[in-house]
Length: 131
Image 1 (cartoon, rainbow, N blue to C red):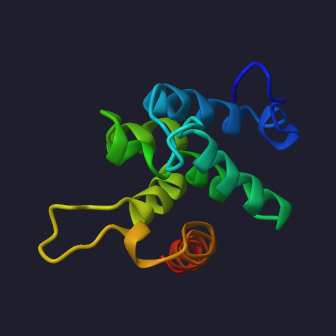
Image 2 (image 1 turned 90 degrees about the horizontal axis):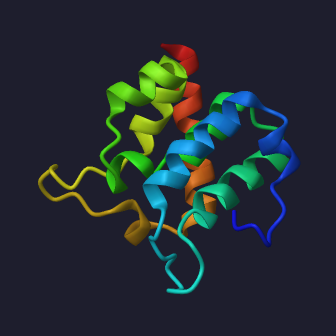
């Protein structure tokens, strides 16, 4: 978030979420949001904030903050797992767009971003709980 905007309480209260914000902020530095004006980092923070309001756990919130980092930066899944654990890594992996898959269409083209991302996180979370 910019200096002019307050940092959400849910973010600063958690060392894990504050740590997830660091690579996300670095990865998205200088990237514009879809509106072309706001910083891109506002998107993953908005997703995480919505999920926090709905009572999702810390691993889900960390995955929400990190969900675009792998596809928009040099940070690899191995580093996500090493820094944040297998549970966060599995959630981020489930949410990462992979253009290398033949016939793949980016998720943003297929759904309204926030509502569908929330549903995907819930499904990925259930799958991680089963595994």
